[in-house]
Length: 100
Image (tube, rainbow, N blue to C red; front, side, top):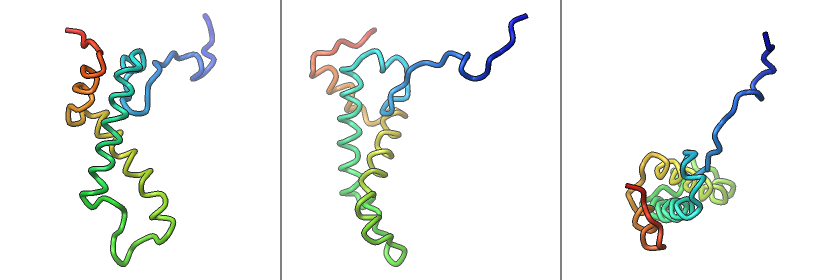
């Protein structure tokens, strides 16, 4: 019997932050399209009022400086859950071919 060496012996797929799937890590063009969609959604969140300013509970200068990082990560999570379909349109526009 071979003893287990711990978590390092379990193979894990490579994932990308914007997509969260191993398949997207294999296609850099789709990864870039999803990152562009995330950047677009981040800007839309800012203009929709998701800029971190919350009245009397505002975090001051630190909140102003780091709210863009939070918005971008929220947008990346939105893209990972399906997004708005912009990544697929960008992928095709950049010459990518989607599998049937």
